[in-house]
Image (cartoon, rainbow over all chains, first blue to last red; front, side, top):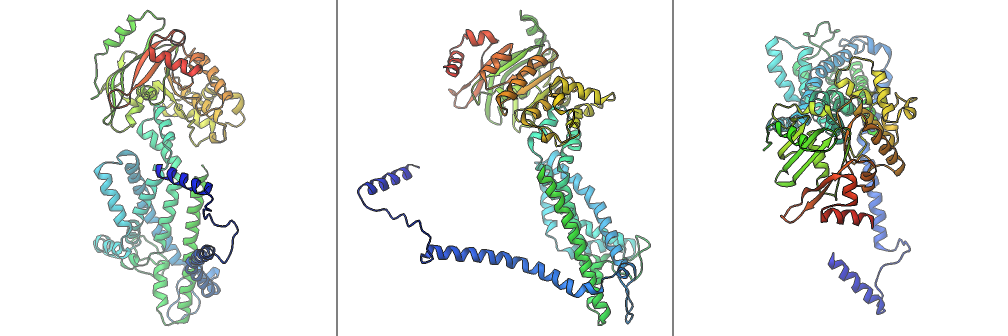
Length: 307
Length: 277
């Protein structure tokens, strides 16, 4: 601070003595290097930001171009075609994806929220919370195939077969850390004054959490859930080990179950035109499902922003 | 560190006083720490039934800290330690056998910043009733609380709109309505008007004078005129910087009139004169 004062005094003195201090001209000029650099850097940042959008838009564009002409009502209602058969669809795979993501959500959402309550409210600084938080962070960076391998060993081998339940469990393992960590954040974001208000009213810890913290945090929690759902819906690797695939409608949770992700994986490597086109259409449907989940999640977070 | 004392001391100090009104909260803080920081020492304030007791003093003198001791809100602060006792109706609220949640139900609180929940006006006021599992006519209780808080006429047409849409002054009166809906014995107010404009402040002050007929009130305020206008008793706290830290302590406590017109202590005189001249 003092330095600055001394320096500005020196500048004042120099000005009074008549020595022009080079402040630069006010007029903008393209001839000055500073202006050129500025324009260049602005253009560069804009360009690179646009470049970051290229992958997303090119994928969606490609899927639309290749997938849309196969899309019809029958695709949603019929079963996958056999080798040289024409037509067909992947209704069972859509249903299978929904069922397995549903199972995964049923397992991971309650568990994740309860754990988040512990992390954010009950014992945020306990060693248990530290360990769980660290574990969740590690788990969220886990290669998804390992969740599949684990569920294969722990569920498929034990129950004696590939099943929707095994697939759901594998996906739940992937969803859990996302749900838990975002829910913890959402609960933490509840302003301290709101929490104090509840405690000041003589709310028990349970009442504070149940009646104030959770209702206030619910949009944030739902955002996390939708993000986790969106991720789980697109996973292929864990399902290859757990639910495998089926060409028929699922009729029991312990049966092999088709999913969009595995259908895309299977059909895209087949030598038949119909199947390959079917894979494109399925990819488009999957992207639309994931996009819907994401948009719903964003809707929730925007609502929480308003409050 | 939290010391439990014999509960008889409270009744003794209450009967010692020649003042009118029973002591509802007998606060006696020997030392209060946040971690290693000694925030308050030597502060004894009796809070009498049906009166308004004001805590005044410069920033950092620990007025809010003392107030938050009275319903165990300080339990939320990490590293909070306390030596002394706070007796509520003769019971030491820091005794191990006491449930802090129950304490807060008897001793309600209104905060500096209006802090309504992100719910409707109605649900905000009914909040305490729900917490306590109130089985009777909630709507009637809510109306009664809102009327007592002089807010009913302004919100009766938007009971089911979000409380966050109200003005600051209305929000604060809503918080008062929420606090009194369950009819606690004591209402603690931590600078309830510092976030409000003079008109809203006036309303809250009138409200306090009305409420003291039914509730005992303790208020922290920066505004000396406010203390003069509303308080029956006033305690002046000051900061002691002589021992290295910044420790607050009670300099003088007495009738508001006496504190403002003929303060006994030099610090009180200086503070009150400094604010007026």
